[in-house]
Image 1 (cartoon, one colour):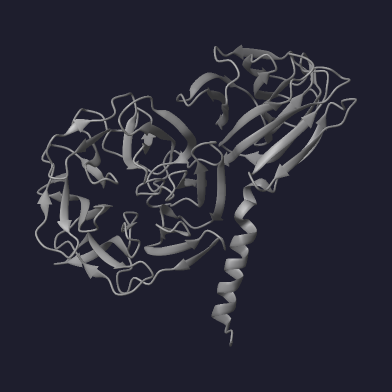
Image 2 (spheres, rainbow, N blue to C red; image 1 turned 90 degrees about the horizontal axis):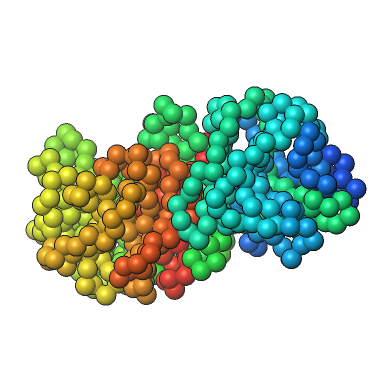
Length: 497
């Protein structure tokens, strides 16, 4: 086989992608702060991307500290998160573990942390000057299972969650730290003669965009992730400096499809490499795409010029690539769902100044309008049994999940809470809905890129909604169907600048 310079470049890029699949975890290093009598250590598990941290030390308190710190250097604003848990019963109920931002590795440095004690006590601890007394803000939440710290200018913020509830702010403090700080995970045994151990899963370091950055004009680098719904463990399977969006999971479970730069890519889950999908002359594809139930056809939405204007138009193309077939005569039209018999496509379309839900035969023809309420109706997707079409709508004043019969009748509201809920995707087994939820302050009709958002899980017939992932993302994170065929996992995209 002859390999020319272009093929060499492609091979190099693919190889580099594989090397960088766990890039975000490579910059952590361990330090014994305050010279504790017993030295600590840490282990990174590549399989579940977890850190096991073991440390000793008298305490993190008073005017100096002793503990083991697994950290990396960070500048500017950032968000640092993890799911923590102690390993073993422990010796002292005052042992501590958690996340920390520290001005230096000195034992008396200015710092703030999210500290969880052995007895469950949780607090924001901080020292506001070198050698100063440690102070704390105590949380009402005991032993949270998710913690997050953020540096935002001179403010340092601690948020926590337990049992899938939305994040609660424990507290925030204003501290004078250097532009460059250390951020990471810590363990202190509160007993100089023993070592304690903690494990940290879903460790994420995220650089948010500046307040005035438009995610469309300045797209962020992306991380392709998979979450195991049962365990809550997230795995980063691909990192790229290129902006990527909206993964679909193939019906055979072997690959994902995502969009980037107007193109569509097949991502092999075994090889962990992307491959361009041939979509002919349809090359301005957006994040509204998905695979038919029989696994043979890909529906895509792409900007197309019509009468001097560019609109999103829906096409179909063989899942392995080929010549696209135009389905919708009018635009803008944004695909969101296949009927289980693969005879109909559902989509969001703007007609006459209003965005509503429509359906159309897969081979083209007359479109059928299914919603008529004022304001935005979006994200229509069939349930796997074909009995309902789920969609999100602002008709109640906030963005909520609704469902209706496939003919547009019997509309009923599914969610009703303080959040802006978008893009509900039914699991293939018909038991669950997963959705992306924005905070209340985001306008109901807007789903921007650069926000702290949640992926939330709800029983399909109603019940408690639980958060399964807190992340930095938004538009492009979970726009389209992304369940694994066995209903055990979900693929999504998170962002960081």
